[in-house]
Length: 93
Image (cartoon, rainbow, N blue to C red; front, side, top):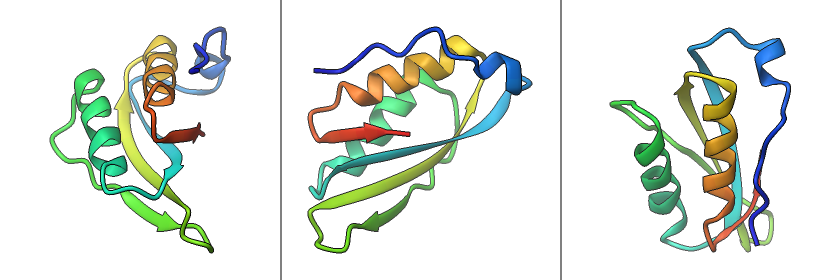
């Protein structure tokens, strides 16, 4: 079950709009990266998503890092929440 991310302090440390790194750790599955990118594209405007994917040492998990332009604290919180809802995802950092 995904936890809704809210009441963060991102607005105290960032000036919007800005580039923001999302690191998503999920099961090593062919659908992980496409699902992450599709979720980001639904909620963030960008013409180019260039994910960096690193497998875990045992190959069970993949870490997907993507840079997205965010427009507000609420936008970051929405993206964290939506990425966390994906079935293959275990952590969003």
